[in-house]
Image (cartoon, rainbow, N blue to C red; front, side, top):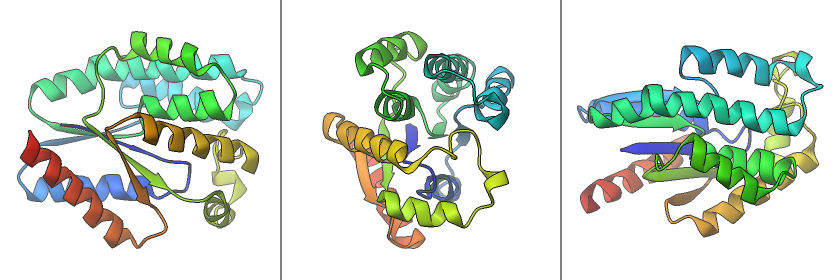
Length: 206
């Protein structure tokens, strides 16, 4: 099974990725965890370029192509081979992030982004996508608890950018049947329970 987690920065998805991995391992499943951008030697090098605040002159088209290049490498080098071996592959972000961040957030053509997705990932789509949704003001509160030096090039973006990104995710959640919207303001335990219930439901229907 291919599972992806999405949401604006500071929504808590990375915590839920690890909790789901722990649950699946307890169920004697074989699991491989990946993050975007990254996950391969080449993709990790691209990640360094994308998130380095020194690269603030990067134009949005370059940003999109770099994310997609990292993703194309990850799909062919990791995701497809592991799925073929019967693994549960859990991805901390996947292609929906580019639609939300570079499409809605940066204002690039969503139609063009979809065409790039078709080339970068082909038919390798998640079986289920968990969108951990939080209002922008909650994200701001969590962001303020971090040191500015700990924030990456995208995390330092302004609040209106994140509003547009969230709108993109909400749009996708209405378009894609694989999306499950989860209120990220709940306790970590409640969110984890909802995710596990959804995975059990999907497994029983396969």
